[in-house]
Amino acid sequence: MSLALLLQSPLQQVRAQFFARLYNMLTSLKLPIMYMALLFFSAPVETEKEHLDVIKRQIQALVASRRKLVSEHKSDPCMKWTITFFVGLKRDILLAFASKVLPEYAFPHLLFLVAHHPDFSTDDLHVVAK
Image (cartoon, rainbow, N blue to C red; front, side, top):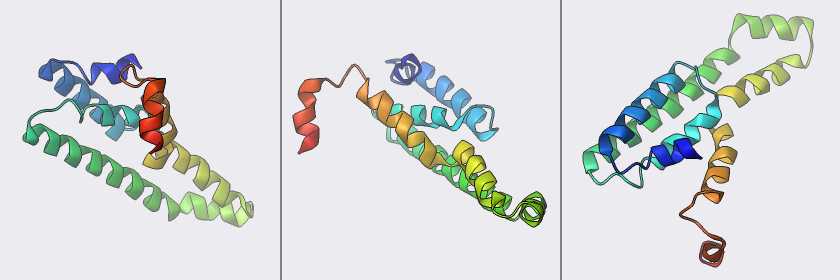
């Protein structure tokens, strides 16, 4: 949670540097996909439209690159070899790989972070329910 709050720092330079570092590590696949959820915490505190546009473009680029990686991996010769020798395992291997790469798998972590964020309380639940 403290990393998510770091992206909401009142200092724009701190937010920008941490976002850039996090983005670079995610694009180079050095961090698990759950860290992608942290990127979404930088948008609510940005006041300048240029910064918001940069954040939006970078998140979209990251999502596109992750999906492209999975689609390229589907046609990987190793996957074809696996299906030749182990019928039915190709799907399991691809799902295991996708769960490490696809951005959709960061969503449960995002929900967890939002649920435990100090700005949200149980009093806000009736507002969210509507």
